Length: 189
Image (cartoon, rainbow, N blue to C red; front, top):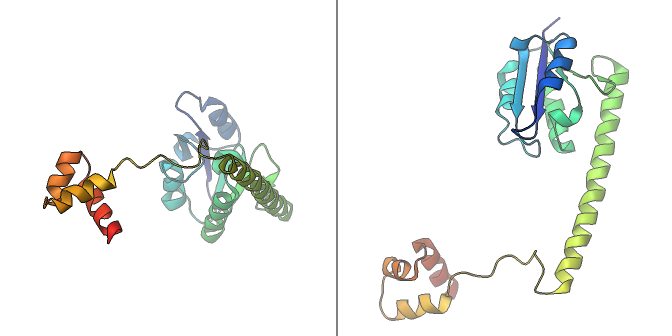
């Protein structure tokens, strides 16, 4: 049998990992086999400990231990991707505060059901969010979803170009990037 590898995460620098560390230690994970970080769980970017764990921290026969699924992943897609990675490497998953232990059929079934419920919840939330955005857009110009107004005066760019100025000179005079000048000129062609 392989090692118990622990993963703990809190979302902000001000939060403490102490409770998760104590639970992982009580489950038999040694401190040298713990991967801990303070990072938002919304995206994989910025979660170096998780990437290190999944990349080279686990081997076939190991068991990844975490306190709750939301510590490991915050989206169903990410969770299923992590589960696939663990399965490909021959690593089991054990969640201490939820009845998930993929070393047995019941734990695998519960894990799959949780994933399905999570996917359903995410779909419902996205649908409600889309309805809210559509309603805000229908209100008119004061909607926060319209984006910021253009900050480059295209007429000024074209006028300076017609006067024979180079894109670099136009950019300097208007205080904008040269690439913005090129985009304006290309849009007018």
